[in-house]
Amino acid sequence: MTDSITTVRDTLRKEALVRRNDLAEHLHFAFSHLIRNTVLALIDELEVSVVHCYLSFRSEVETMSLVRAMESSSLQVIAPVVVEDGVESNMKHYQLSKILTTGLYGIPEPEPNIPADIHSIEMVIVPIVAYDGTGTRLGYGKGFYDRFLAEINPSAKRIGLAFSVQEVDEIPRLAHDQQLDMIITESGIVHTERY
Image 1: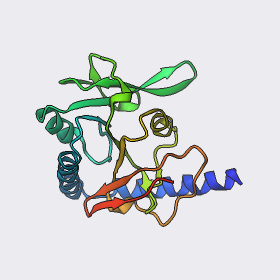
Image 2 (image 1 turned 60 degrees about the vertical axis):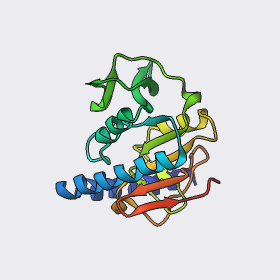
Image 3 (image 1 turned 120 degrees about the horizontal axis):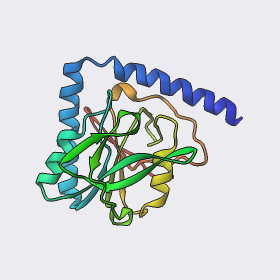
């Protein structure tokens, strides 16, 4: 059963990535800008002060302007860094810095690496490959964010960023899946309830 679920998830992931990659550059820019503004308004509304945010690469919703805007507002911004731990890769979490370097998989990361307290995080902004209306997300399949979300304070808001072309009807869930509280697209906010 798990094998068939994995196959369906892999297919959904590949198809959503194609749609995201095919988004015209001017739409990618415009939609990312709309999403950025929605996130900043949400941060003000929820009055959070410590935000963990992915640093975008490839065709992900662009977050560089978002994290710099958060820094200008005196928010504490924490960024993930993918590291090799022996055989397997994992994420570590550091204070965002002015200087960014290119890390594993070509993902931007802060330099120097100043460790952050993940238990202080009030909002997590995660990348999405595919999502459904229940708040279930697919990433790249490594499980980085599922493991991370299971470790942080349960009260932290879990926000996914995606373009509406990445939405699918239903993602079959696996036991380790961590659900999001909301997904922000260029069309607005998709509110969900954690299961």
